[in-house]
Image (cartoon, rainbow, N blue to C red; front, side, top):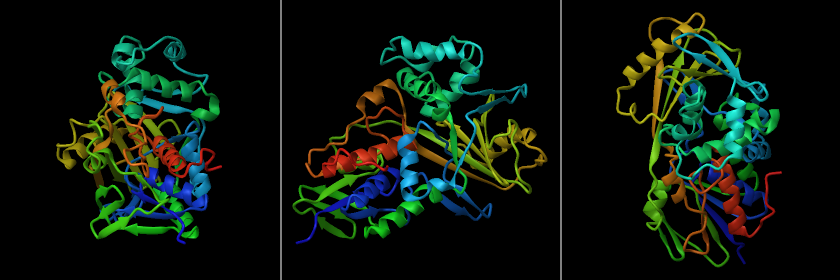
Length: 403
C-alpha cells in the first residue's frame, strides 16, 4: 500500500518550510513549482550585467524571527548567517548627520513612544501617521521604520501591526533586535539547503509545472493531473493573486511595491556607521546594504516608482548615495534595477482584516504564505511560520517544529 503524500505547491519560503517539516516528520513529499528554481522572492541569481551573484531583494533577519532562524538552522543554512551587533545606523542625506538605534539606547522620546504603543489601546483602523505623525521622531525614525517593516506609507499603514513588531523587537532585549545577514546570499541560506534536505529525505522536487485548477480530489497541472488519494494532503503556497485564481472564494488583497537597485564598484564598499547596512532619511533611497563590491538599495512603498525608467531611478539614487561611499565615482557605475510590483500586501487596516487563515473548503487542502493572517507583516518570518503551521494542520501534528 502506498503511503499518503503531502503535495506542496510553491517552492518559496512558505512552501519549502512546509515541505521540509513534513519530510523530516517521515511523510512522502512532492514539491511542485512553476518556476525552474526554488526560492520565490527570497533567492539569489547570477546577474550578467554586474557579473555578480545578487539577491532578488535585500533582507535582514532579526533575532526575534525565531521561526525563520530555526528553519535555516534545521536545513543547514544557518551557518552562512553573519550575526551582527544589535544596532541600526541612520543617516540624514541632506545634513549627513549620523545616529543609531539600539535596545537601551534610543533617541530622546523614542522609548516613551514605543512603550506607549504597547500600553495604550490602538484602534484597529488607526494609521501610523495618525498615531505617530505629530511626534518629533516621525520623519527621521517612524516613517522609515514603517515603510521598511510594513512596505506601506505611514498615512495608510496599520499602527496596530507596526506597534506589535516594534514591541517584539525593541522591547524583547538585545537578542531579539540582533540583525542577521545572509552573508552568502539568500539561496545559500534557505532554498539550496532546503532542496538538499528534501532530496536526502526522498522528496520529489518537480519544477516547471504550473497548477491550473483544483478539483474535489485532483490537482490539475499544465502537464497533467495529480489525483488526491485517501490520506493525501496538499499545501497551496503561492502568492495571493495566484491563490485567488485557483480558489475564487478568497478575498482580494491589495499589494505594495518594492524597488531594489544594485551597483557594482571597483573596490570593496564601506558604509558610514560601520555596519553592512544603513538606513537613509531625506532621500529616495531608504536602505543601503553592502556585500564586497556591490552596493544594494531598497526602496519600499515604491508604487510611484515602478513605472519610471530603470536608468532614471538608478541615476537619481546614485547621485544621493555616491557621496556617502568612500572612493565611489561620480558617474553612474554598472547597475541592475529590480521592480517587485507585488512585493507584499499593503498593510492597511482594511487589508489586514481580510487576511485569510490556512483552512479551505477542501479538508485535504491548506494555505501557506506570508499574506495569511499572522502576527507579523509579510516577511520571511511570516512565510516560514505559515508553512510550518500549514504542515501541522495538514498532518495533524501540533508538536511539529524545526528544533
